[in-house]
Length: 640
Image 1 (cartoon, rainbow, N blue to C red):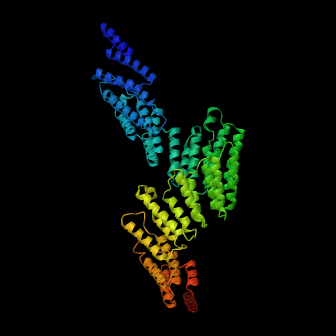
Image 2: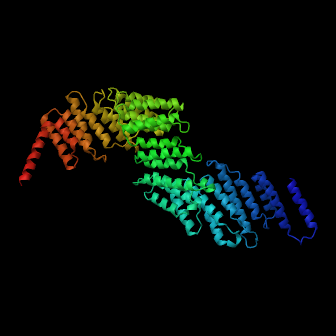
Image 3: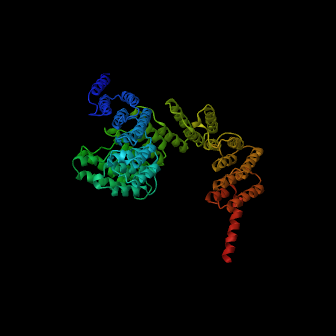
């Protein structure tokens, strides 16, 4: 209030004197600039905006407010932005400031205005949009067009300010996962002769690390080499190493390690500020270890880990490995799928538990469990469960969805008699922990029952399927049964105590067809489904009528595969032949049916060792006949 009174008094006193000495408008502008400066320091942008509105109403036909007034107001608003990228208030602030810029353009892009517009408020608004990962390319294009159309109306824009504006949009595109837009915008920067700086190159290199194009690592290294050595920083090397770590090219691990060692050498030879810009980070070591681990190169990965610890002991500025570093090494061990690697993973986990700088987390324990499961050890389930118990004791909290997923997958593949029971317990623990099992979780639990060979496996597997259907109908679409769900239940019939397995299997198969016909694209029988039905038919037990019904179902399902766009494979023919051998009592009829199936298998080029072995085991008479025929044909061809 005092400031407004002061302006009023100053104005009244001035007009009493000689008005020709200076412009009253100029004096009012100076006075308002003083007030805005005070409000800027007080961080009250709303009052500044209100003052700007009053000034526009006070002098609708003059050059007030000045561009400086708009710039100060935009600066005040930008100072209110938080570090939260999800803060939607920033979007509103940026939009408000963009409106201020439009008002400034309306007043000062006119011919009669003698005031020069600054590029800086545009850069600040682009920065605000960048904070929320919103690439305001429209605003950048707008101000660049203004610079071209009205060069005499803008204060000379420094290269640094212009580049910063483009960088804000590049960053926003990168952070919003739009790599193609980053590359295209970078090309337009070059077309407009906008200079790239260290930040530009960092965004470009990080973008290349996410595009996953086969040639990106080579391109990223070329970009790095084209930079002046004095401009290169840790972030640039890190981005290129990450790009190599994600590459499938041979020698990627060696490339990543060479870049890491180059950075270490630059750091060792630098001093002062430059030395601080080149400190190797934990992330670049993690990426180099990952690059080797993904290719199962244990020795160089272990060397990098050891070297990292050694450098940290000799230089307090160098980082110690953290849990993520060890996790990257553990992941490499798990990829080896060997008992030796699994044992080393357990040793490394024990070492982590004893350290103060790299305590194992849930991912660490889960990765070790994965290494054990992949090792092929007969006692892998028990060992993995012991690691799980250690995790609960160490982390003092329940497992996460990833850990439970690994355990469910383990029991699904274990073929243990207690696999189904253990899978049910894990599902229950997930629900108690507030983690809702999804369709993959349930499918693995059903498969655990199916492969457990328990007499009651099918009953429990079908109960899980019906439970999924009920939850899905109640609104949980993440648990909606799919093709795998039904197929796993059908597989549970093989060793079950169900009397008529063929009928039960074909009932589920028909249910799938009905679901698909009603528009459920997630439930469409495939070749694995058909093979599972054929297996159920083969393992159906009972009187002659039951067995006859089973073979009729098998032949009917097989004949309709083409109708449902399902292509048979070798296993389809093998299972059909086994069903014929098990279920058809009359030898003549059995051999006739089997030969028709085998001849078709021959025509389609699907005869393999498993098909031949099935003939020999379940259809010995036909096997002998076909073998004799083959020998005769071979002998005749040889004589000819």
